[in-house]
Amino acid sequence: ETGVTQTPRHLVMGMTNKKSLKCEQHLGHNAMYWYKQSAKKPLELMFVYNFKEQTENNSVPSRFSPECPNSSHLFLHLHTLQPEDSALYLCASSQDLTRELSYNEQFFGPGTRLTVL
Amino acid sequence: AQTVTQSQPEMSVQEAETVTLSCTYDTSESDYYLFWYKQPPSRQMILVIRQEAYKQQNATENRFSVNFQKAAKSFSLKISDSQLGDAAMYFCAYWGGSEKLVFGKGTKLTVNP
Image 1 (cartoon, rainbow over the protein chains, first blue to last red):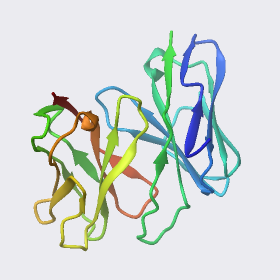
Image 2: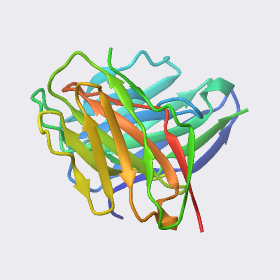
Image 3: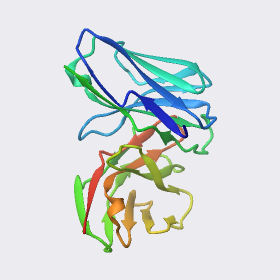
Image 4: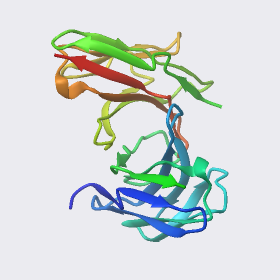
């Protein structure tokens, strides 16, 4: 596997289910991101991890719970979701975060298409 | 807060022709980066081209070039000699030194044979 992979690619769940999305990066990066992509809306940054530490929680509801056990893996645990949470969830990684103006390119995974019934 | 606006939800172009996608942004920063990302139907988003705000020269990558107008806060993407494989969603994005990439809503490009 190369780049950023995400599993599953498609997920259908009921509002009472608990499921998890998985992201794995094979690029040796230290920063990982979760984005939500809804139709006709800009990509929304949800969470950012740098060296396994969460550095950003963009006011995401607690029914979304991220986990970053190491720099290569990122999970998004889902429980009691709502139909409006149906979207494409994208994972990305970059070399690391820097406070200086030196952009580290983010590499994206293919996404998980989530449908909440 | 920074915002990115793509005013063209959809565009189409004939194969081998040239098309320009528009993007405007709002920021009070003087140093920042701007990007165009491509998301084909398979959904893996890839970086097409980037521009550093302090550079006056417009970035080019093969058939892709940008027209960066800093004073006007405009950043358009020109695709020359369009190919069928160019069909995708194109997202303009801004990065000003925080962790956040700020994206526009995207432009869906159709390439007609």
